[in-house]
Image 1 (cartoon, rainbow, N blue to C red):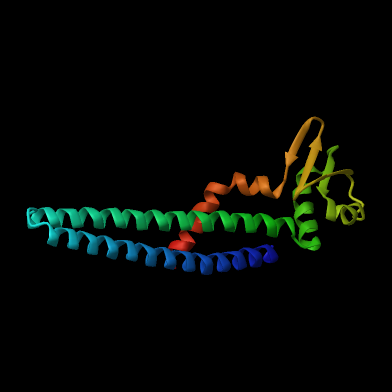
Image 2: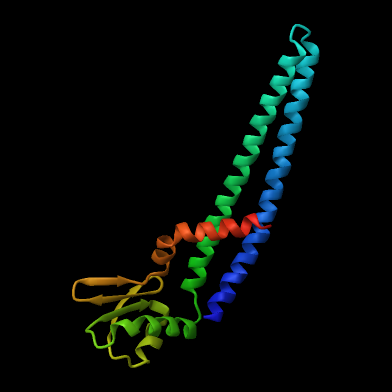
Length: 183
């Protein structure tokens, strides 16, 4: 499991660095928007003598609020983009899990099926190695894109990594967002 932890730590580290870069750029862009808005509104207020000072200040405040909202939206968008990239990397890392880690994960999941008549579908690149294990289950020539699937009668137990990540997406997004906010 430490290989999986190392992979996840590497992904988190890469995502944090990428997040910092995207967020820093978003903050710079937001500050430029704010500065331009303030300058525009100040110039407009100075040229227009009919407007009162209070109206100019209200307009500047409104513009600042708008710019801050745009900056917040840019940050949220950047964070969501990073979260999506991290989850795609997780799926890729799991799909390309080394054979030993894959076999350990498969065996751990097979424990619940001991003594049952199931058929196992595995990743194409792991098929020969799984067949060589001489497991007490039928190994299907049908394959899955990532992870595995167990078929028992008409029931399919889906262990596809992409499906599992999507199933856990809400929790994972929360954890990733928490990591990003700790920067």
